Structures are given as structure tokens and as C-alpha cells.
Length: 162
Image (cartoon, rainbow, N blue to C red; front, side):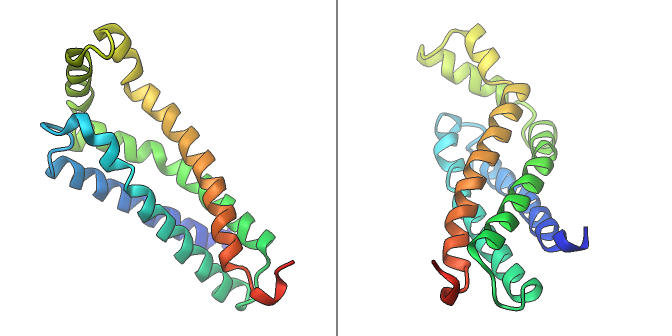
């Protein structure tokens, strides 16, 4: 586990940042009167996660690989970080939808069905805690792999590029 302590640290940091972001969303009204545009605002958190990947992989390069890292080493580190973030993800969801915004799904279903975009039944199935867990895990994994690959390219030691 010592080999992955940097990834663990940054996965924990990203978890705290995600909870803080959810609290910010709630405070700014994106879980209440602006709930219809919440998905747009929440996508901005991707920029925070990219910054986390950059800082994590830079730290891994400097402190674990003695400032020399290949793309493959950086990519594997990014994949480990992605997996750890995904493992912590249910905690973020649980805190968000039970403590920060327990009526989030009820409000979102009401707004979506009132617009006529979906029936109440369809919206209730789609906008549920279980479905958000599945979608979130898939999104974390897929976007994490892409982010890991891109950040690894820029983090790799330049003289090792091939």
C-alpha cells in the first residue's frame, strides 16, 4: 500500500473536495430553485478533478519516481487514482443525498416531470440514488482513464517521450 499512498492521499482529497462542491451547489441553490441547471454547474467540478490528477501525478513523479517518470508509470498511477476515487464515490453520494440535500431527487423529479420531459415514473427511476451511484461509477471510471492518459502525457519526463 505504501507504493500507492500518494494516490490514496489525493483520492481522499478529491473526496473531501467533492463533498465541499456538493455543499457549494446546495448553498448556491443548485439543489433547490436552480435544480434544473444543476447538471451544468456540477460538470465544472471536472476542472477540479483535472487539477487533482495533475497535482497527484506531479507529486508521484517527484517523490516516488525521483522526477523521472514514463508515460506508462504516470498512466498506471492515474488509473490507481481513478480506482480509489471510484471506491470513495459512494461515500460522497451518501453524504450528499442524506445530509447535504436529502430532498434532491424529489425536487429534481418534480422539475423534470413538470417540464414534460419525462413522466413521474420514468423520472423516479432515472433520478434515484441507485442510478446515480451506477452512473457516477461509470463516469468516474471512463473519465478517469481519459484524464489519466492525458495528464500522464504532459507529466512524463520529456526526454523519455517516444
